[in-house]
Image 1: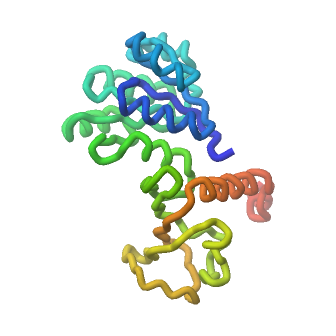
Image 2: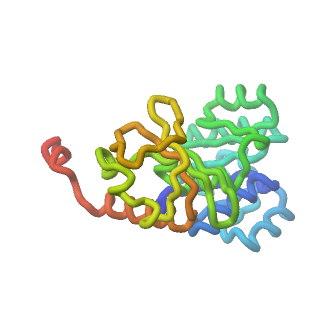
Image 3: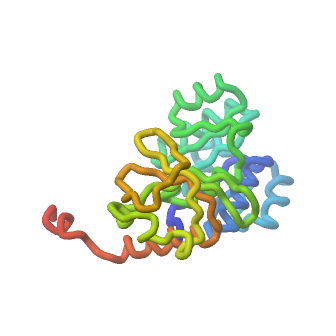
Amino acid sequence: MINSKTYAVFGLGRYGTAVAKELVNNGIEVLAVDIDPEKVDEAVKEIPFCRCADVTDPEVLTELGISNIDVVIIAMATDLESSVMSTMLCKDMGVKTVIAKCASEMNCKILSKVGADRVIFPEQESGIRLAKNLISSGFVDILEISKDVSMVELDVRPEWENKNLMELNLRKKYSINIVAIIENGEASVNIDPEKPLKRGMRMIVIADTAKLLKAQSLRSHVKDTAGPTPKEKNRR
C-alpha cells in the first residue's frame, strides 16, 4: 500500500473536489464533507465517502470521527470564519496535519496562527499536485507533466548511497531519467554517472508516474515488514 494515512477534505468546491478525487483514484479512502447538499450529491458519484455536514460544529466532527484522521485538507478559502473554526477544532481533536487553502496572504497568516500546519495558495499549487505529494511519501515534490509522466524531486535513498548511477541503472529499473543533481543547495545538470551518490543529495527526474509510485510502494512494504534493525533491538 502506498500510503496508510487517513484523509478528510472539508469543502467540495473545485479545489477540494480535485484533491479528494485524486486521492480516491490512487486507492485511498477519503472522507469528503461539505455543508451544501447539492455539492455532496454531485461529489458522491466519484468520491464514495461523502457527508453533508457543518464542520464548524464540534459535535459533528466528533460524530464523523475526525480525531482518527491523520490529514485534514480544509478547502473553504472563501469562508475564513469556517476555515479558522474547523482548523482549531481539528487540532484540538488531535489531527496530526491540517492543510488549509487560503484566499489571501493575510488569511494564510491567520490560519497559520490558529494551528494550520500548512497553508496553500491555489494559484501556486493545484489540488492534483497536492494529492500526489501526500500520496508519494519519500518524494520531495511532484509536478505532473502529463497523465503518465511527472517531474519529481527525489531524495537519495539510503540503499543508493555510495553507489553511482551506472551501478544503480535507475532508468532500466524504474524508467527514471535524471535531469539534475542537487547537492548542498546547488543544482547541476552536468551529471557524472560514475560519481557516488551521497546522503542529503536530491535528484530531479522525469519518470513514469505509475512505475515510480510502485517502486515507492514496494520500498515502504519492505521497510514495514523487515522488522527491527539491530540498533532498534538494542534500544529495546
